[in-house]
Image 1 (tube, rainbow, N blue to C red):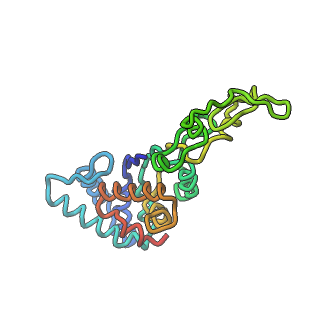
Image 2 (tube, rainbow, N blue to C red; image 1 turned 60 degrees about the vertical axis):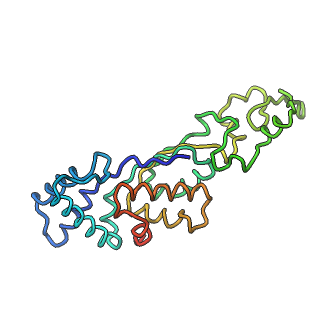
Length: 240
């Protein structure tokens, strides 16, 4: 399984939110915030630092203030989005992650078991832990019949079992034989506030599936590697 943090967006917007409540906002200040953010972060939102120390110091102060207030005033952190791609999480684990689709504002697209074909595949986490029946039979050197007759109907051999003849290419029928260990890919977007909730539910200290925990902790590592203030301490403190 691979996890990729594609980008962090909306940091300048989130910083700007700090200056509205007490009417300290000016358009000049907002333009300065956006200019500094564009120089200290790369185009994907990863902190790289500016050649001008004053800009680095300003950015650091702004981010520290944002985190200081944002964990309680969670709307501020909702301006920050993470774009993340996951490759190869098992389908059952993807279903667990899908349970948070409301937190993602439904911004999640995954491999379809209806539109895509799967063979005798499984995610890395399951490899060596389970042996599907098809693979076990092959290892034992047993040759399965290509067709069988059941109650007068003919069924043809497919992945993980048999399908009634004439329906073997029907995607809605084929996916009935797919196992939850098949690897699945998906992309999603989530704001910082909502990611805090997901992290609380799916981190190493919870009861999630082990591969889901790995995915969650890898996301946390990568987010912190982009922006050091967006870390586990913050995720766990966010009131959400």
